[in-house]
Image (cartoon, rainbow, N blue to C red):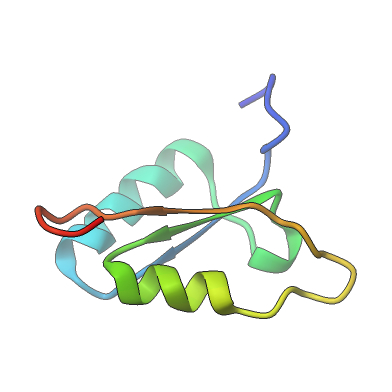
Length: 77
C-alpha cells in the first residue's frame, strides 16, 4: 500500500465465521491498527456491524476518517 493515502487500516468484524475468515486474510495482507490511528476503517460483516461502525463517534481530533463495508456473506448489501 505504498502509493496509497490509506497506509494504516483498521478492520472491524462480526463474530460470524465468514467475517472472521475475511478478517484474518485482510489483516495478514494489510495489517491492522487501532481505529483511532487509522487512515480508513473497514467493517466486515452484515448490515448491523457496518451501521454500528459508521455510527461510532469519531476519536477527538480524527474527524472525517473514511469507512467502508464488506459483506462476506451471500445475501446483503
